[in-house]
Image (tube, rainbow, N blue to C red; front, side, top):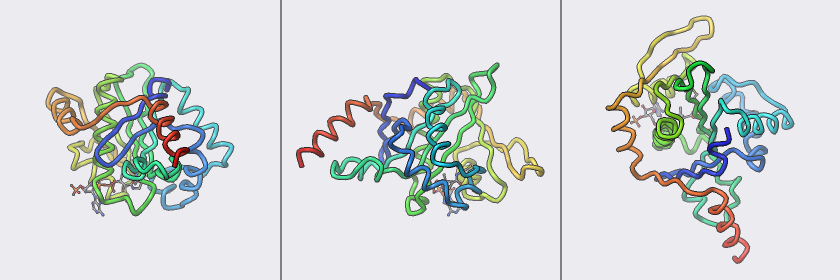
Length: 211
Ligand SMILES: CC(C)(COP(=O)(O)OP(=O)(O)OC[C@H]1O[C@@H](n2cnc3c(N)ncnc32)[C@H](O)[C@@H]1OP(=O)(O)O)[C@@H](O)C(=O)NCCC(=O)NCCS
């Protein structure tokens, strides 16, 4: 969607930036992994299809996506942005008649970054963005039954299991955004800063070119 095309969300460990064409080659490499295809229920795409997908994430009003960057690496202006990428996080507005319902997806693609609290931080940041900017009232996640880590994470975040589909071998978990959830999200993300992505990137590039 257009709304986040110039948005940078800064957390403790991560920066979330809009998915742009320059991120596609690394993303495409990640998705060659059969483990990631299975964990995220994704089909492999050609590089050309991945560029089409990136354009659709940017243009379509029912999709909001951010690329997750390692903040420490990004702050080291000697490192190209593509090298700071560690995953992505998405919101899909799955029901055109109910734009307050969002399906959430997250992938920490780089295995060495898993198990360090990044999945939890990113999920909180994305949920707060969804609530504050898109007025989301209900979040849903669909997770493969064999993806115990992801199921454990969303249960830890207080999502409730609502159904299991044996045919697709997946479980659906949900969270209604009531006042207590709003308060908790605001508190978990009180450190979040929203910045202008283009400005931040060009000042980073200026520093790179001077060194
Ligand atoms: C699932 C995923 C997003 C979790 O992110 P992460 O950064 O590894 O998770 P975190 O370190 O933030 O941990 C969050 C919670 O997940 C659970 N968890 C994390 N690693 C775990 C492990 N090895 N075993 C069991 N539970 C684990 C715990 O409940 C943990 O909370 P706690 O640390 O308070 O106990 C990440 O592992 C991932 O992207 N995996 C590959 C793609 C994928 O499966 N995406 C989800 C598709 S639905």
